[in-house]
Amino acid sequence: MEDEPTLICNFCSKPICGGTAVIRAGDGVAHVRCLVEQTGLRALELQDQAARTVERAGRTVAEARKLARQARRRPGRFLVSARITAIDHAHRVLTLGPLTIRLADEIALDGLRVGMRVTIVGMATTGEQIGFQLMLDQDAPDGPPQATPQPLPASPPLAP
Ligand SMILES: [Zn+2]
Picture (cartoon, rainbow, N blue to C red):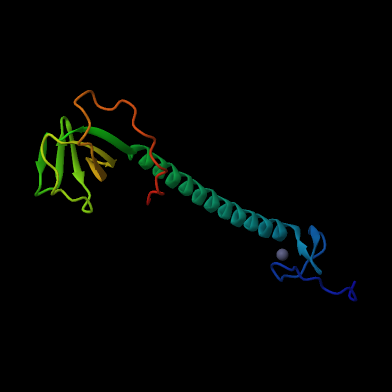
């Protein structure tokens, strides 16, 4: 008995006395309860990590859903062909019957007169419609608005 080397627990560094449950741990041995405790802590750590990962993933999904909702709320492009009923030069706003369209800065208002028929391609944003392309339809006869607008070229990707 005296020759037997004292075994030291790998985890708590206390000698392992006879009668206690012992388990091999790496190069040495350990109390079973110490191993369980360590393993339990590691499991908790992993659980915590997993929880954080799930939380991050959840936030990413929520963010993606928010962007999708915003994109849906952002109405797409419009194309309208109608007569100008009013021009607000100061605010660069054209009224076409019930529509109010603010024109992008690149569009010159000089040649526009009330009564002219125009086709405007634009983008509806929250609260207003911005026209960024305007074509004069001076030769178009009076009549109902063009029923079949031409398909629009692909939109550039929208900034988030
Ligand atoms: Zn121990």
